[in-house]
Length: 199
Image 1 (cartoon, rainbow, N blue to C red):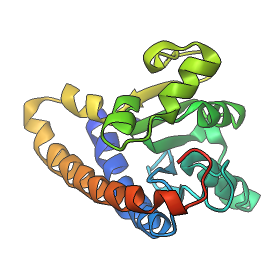
Image 2: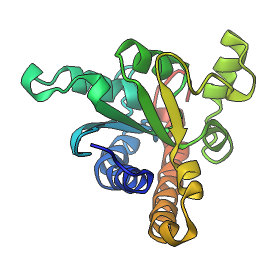
Image 3: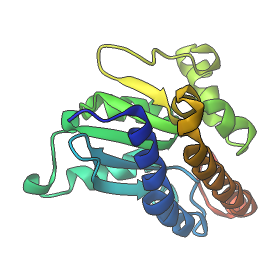
């Protein structure tokens, strides 16, 4: 089944707003970061699983890791092969999550906020810092298309649409950004009490 870029953007925004954000809102008041993810089927874009950051439970439980754990805990009959799925991440995955997506055999991921947004808008610089200090990757410039997967920024995809197709997408994206700005303020106020090593 071929899915148009507009339909994929629209569905990704719907999943972020209606499936990931409510989970993240609950997680943030517990001291967790604002990151979340979801997995949908390529065939019909139906939701398989959504998850959010749970670092107050375990510092490794980033949004993507929590989602992958939930995905692989599904019964085999309910779990499609990763290659038949689309991985959606609210924020561009850190080095841990890039590796996890690779090891679990997904051939794609789509993200809403890039590394610079995470650092500048949400005051969480660790993704860029770790890529620089550990892997000597400047400015987050990893290979976004490689033999394992291809990654795409949802906002860039929206910008690439014809003007006549962008209105609803831009409106929804703006609404989502406002929600994350509010969640970020809550997280920043609570993070010192969270116990997360890199808060």
